[in-house]
Each structure stands twice: as structure tokens, then as C-alpha cells.
Image 1: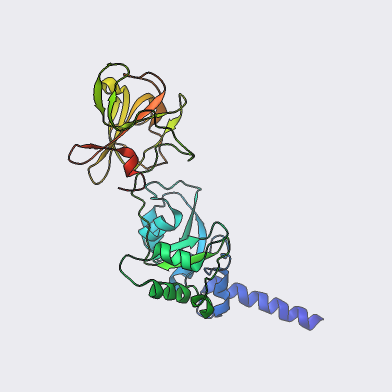
Image 2: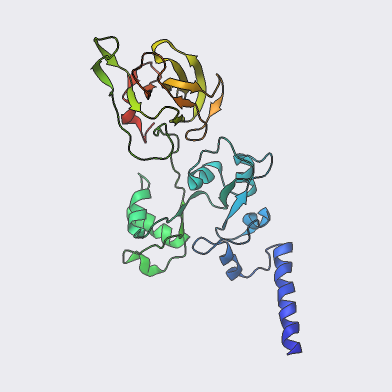
Length: 307
């Protein structure tokens, strides 16, 4: 019994030494603690692990003071686009104390969030425009150490599985609805010609009106820089956000403006203001308008999910 306890003590000491002083002698199976299809390892392993590991590993990183997305990408041997795609976040701002999924690969680390997903569906969804679906599926199987039989049938994925998709990146610089919480919205006045309820004549409506309760928070539909914040004639309290391609999104009839000219704002993160009925308005709603770089207004609903 004493001999068994001694062996156990020695084994624990050896394991701790390997973790503390490097990965040179770590057995391949030990990497499974950090691997793609198994749970991640300790909450905060040293970043050297990510530099030396021979396979993809991942973990949740708690953001510290002064950290930014570029320094984290370099520290964990990946790139900015990979971290943005995997976390579905542009990370224009990093909140101290928040968490970010980090890993040492370049591409999308996809997490299966529901039942019923299959490898075939995943491959078809993320296949690059140039490339063969069969070859792409083969690369997913190889990169994730899936069984060869996954190539023959429609391999089912389990909720919580993480699948690495090399060189796949999400386009996060797209428009979304300017409210958080999702759900259905109602358009009370669409883009195009209409009879104006206050001016009592037929004019072209350059945006769409979205009725919402007074005081509902309004967020950027797309990230950018505040080009205007204040009173704008019939639009009342208005915020205009200019995007990096030169297009502008206008948010009108606000009850309150929460940003200033020149501020950088991230979509769905920084509140621009609150729904109101200022200017030429008959009730609480948001006037939402998108203007192209050439100065032409387009139907904002046609831009949701696109640039």
C-alpha cells in the first residue's frame, strides 16, 4: 500500500512539472484537455502552450487591463479575424473582466449549439466559393481527427462539439436591425413614395419607420464613427454613423442622444440613443435610413445581413 502511494505521489509531481516547465515531454494524449472535440483545459493555461502545441487547442481567456484583440491574437498564435469570427464579435472594444474564446488556429472554431447538425450540412454552409465540397469535407475530417467513416455517411454532430474550419472567416461588417433582443419588428412606413401624415402630400420616404415603445434603446446597425449627433430639422434628435466604406446610417426622431460626434461605435454594443417622437413625428418610432457613399438612400431592410 505504501509503495502504491509513493508511485501516485511521483506521478502527480511529474504531471505538474510538465505543465509548469513546458510541453517538450508532454504525451500526445495530454493535449486532449485542450483539443477541439473535447472540453478545454485549465481556465488560464500559459500562452506558451498555444505556441508549442502540435495540434489545435482552445480555452476561454479572461480579458485583463490594457489587453486588445491584436495582442491577444499574437499571444495565442492566431490572427484577429479568427478570434472575431469564432466569438462572432468585431471586438472594437474589449471589456475588462469579460471572456473571449482563444485558440492557436487560423480560421473559424465553430461550436455546435443545437441538435440535428451534420457534417454534410456544416461543409455545405461554410464551403469556400472556390473549391470542391468533397475536398473541403475531407479537410474538416482530417483537421478535427474525425473517424474516416464520417466521409461515407452523414456524420452527426453533438451539441457542444467544436469543429475547426481552417481559413474560414465570418463577415461581421454587415447591417443588422438597430435593436437588441431579436424578435419580429413592424414597419409602419416603408421605403418609397407615401402620403406624409403631417405634410399632407405625397413625397418619397428615404428610410423606413419602425414603431417601438418610447425609450427603447437604439444601437448601431453597423459599426463605424459618429458623423452627426444632434437636432436635424424634421428628423428631430438624430444620430448618423459613417461606416468604413463611406456609407451612412441615419437614426431619427430619438428622444435622447447618447453619443457625440467623432465617437467610434460598435454595432449592437454602444447605445446611440432612445426611441422618441421628436421632429415631424406622429408617435414613438425610429426613422432608419441608409445612404450610400454616392449620397443615394436605399431601402434599409434590403441591407440587413449585407454590406
